[in-house]
Length: 266
Image 1: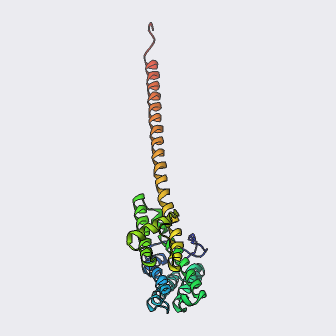
Image 2: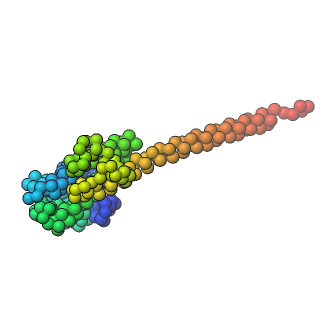
Image 3: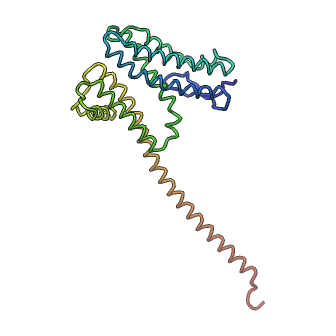
């Protein structure tokens, strides 16, 4: 198996997307993504479940452990199909570090009583966010404006639910959605603000996600307008070209008539 496939980076040089062909290591990697992505999404509530539980939480540790196992198993299984698993692991240091951080997050004591545990779980959350963005990159890159708008609404809606759960001043889901939108857009009206450590940490990730999804939507709208202008220019150029070609045909036809018709008096 050749490792000439291009790297796609997400924060660190160490993630490889293999070509997806039937029966290849890339196909195995693609199938594992369907198992890895849900477990990574599950670590997002796990971070806050554990943070809100003074003595730790078994469910949070279980979610972290499942994610670590899925990442490690997918990495090694894909590597086995390349014919050189250790080399594949070396080419995917990001997933190796992610699995390590997730495993530590499952084993460490409660974050409320350990600053080190909270820091390491924060690193795990950041790596998880980058990994999710890397996995969704092909779908986002090929997505239409409608798809990106739907993605933005889903992200902001999830963030709204998160604020409703974590922030005591967000009494309703509407308050949570409003706080999510003002945080993601970095407006900051000040009517509702994060007040607890959990909601403040959550707000940091909401800002990062807001930058990402709102930038994608803005870029898609701008691209749509540019594409419209380009099509209009192409249409005008083609119309002018057709007009000039028709004039050229008329000139050629006139020359042929002059050549075939003898002058008067001959």
